[in-house]
Image (cartoon, rainbow, N blue to C red; front, side, top):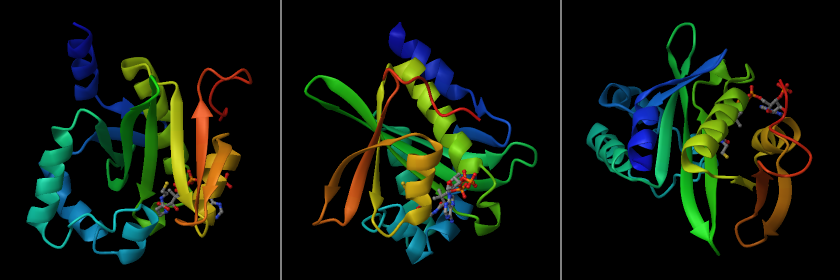
Length: 187
Ligand SMILES: CC(C)(COP(=O)(O)OP(=O)(O)OC[C@H]1O[C@@H](n2cnc3c(N)ncnc32)[C@H](O)[C@@H]1OP(=O)(O)O)[C@@H](O)C(=O)NCCC(=O)NCCS
């Protein structure tokens, strides 16, 4: 019963003022393939190991995530035009009985950056997973070099510092929805 409810909700789009989160469907593959030819984007999103050379590689990836219960990937569209601008990926894991979702967001179209898409997409996705999958903890692992993403999660979404890895040159940031200082950062 509970699983059916989750499934139903994920058939629907999550609609915000600027951004719509929609399921990654076959019609998105071609543009996604173009995005994944950009080595900087692959590096910034930690996707270096993903095979993305051909359209078929991306089609395999799309089929794989659709069938992965722990990987929630949405394509981000502009609310007004429904143009694809990026994607958001949440990977659910469990440690010591606590479930957490690691967030990776990408606004691939450079002309769409700094317009609030990422911030709204992260908030929509967190609220959705909190309601449907009862997840209270969200995590972002951000490279030391990724200033934009650090500002997004730390300054505009209220994530707190958890730890730094010298080996990977990255920091882990977290957000507990039930923490005492309130809900997600206001608009
Ligand atoms: C990081 C990224 C997702 C931000 O997307 P975006 O839609 O441009 O971000 P938003 O417009 O929602 O910006 C929200 C806040 O993030 C911060 N930010 C975003 N881009 C920034 C930049 N270039 N420099 C400094 N701060 C930046 C700002 O605090 C901004 O708030 P403000 O515009 O009110 O100052 C985008 O630059 C991107 O896709 N980069 C490549 C992939 C990547 O690094 N993903 C993160 C993996 S976790």
